[in-house]
Image 1 (cartoon, rainbow, N blue to C red):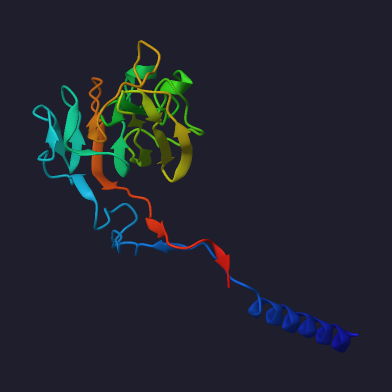
Image 2 (cartoon, helix red, strand yellow):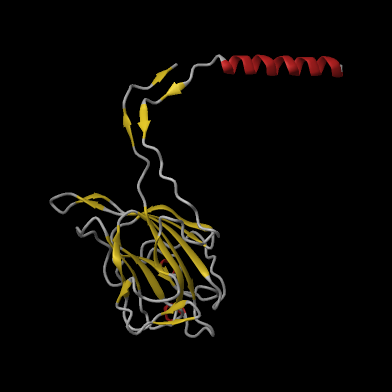
Length: 253
């Protein structure tokens, strides 16, 4: 019985391999550009070779508005007013690490509050949401006033949290009307909390979201909400989809 089974299995595998080797191959007819080679960072959170490093723990030379912000142990500490990146970005990948103040003070929106603004207009909330209740679309990881995060994976105050953000900028027609909305994918501490979420517009506190035409690129800004939140290791990569040209009709060979 064992010999018969072994022979049968061997015969099936031989026929399968022979059939696959004789199969036609589908070709989509696209001639792809060669993807650029990007050397990754030496550690998981280190910036890759093509990243623009906005804050490396030493100075605020890449920011405007940081006159009252300070640096302690390589971390940026919120002062008075927003800081705004000198460089502007459209579609991009943004990495930010942040830590809520210790000892924790205040409750709700008054505890460890700040925010990351894409293009200076679209906020991903920063808040101490570790055992701190507030409205769900205003907690840490929320796209402010539009959607809560899919999960609360905040670390304790004083510990470091990590945002990895994939941003697709909105596009506008020549007449100022919306051509395509913004999208955001976000990982908080390695956990997916937004998966290609379609933004309804900007993220104000006191009115519904709306889109108003603006340029293809805009700055990254970080909010002062009167809490000494810390930030470190901020870097961004401009993102371009793989490109190719349809040089032939799809075919089998």
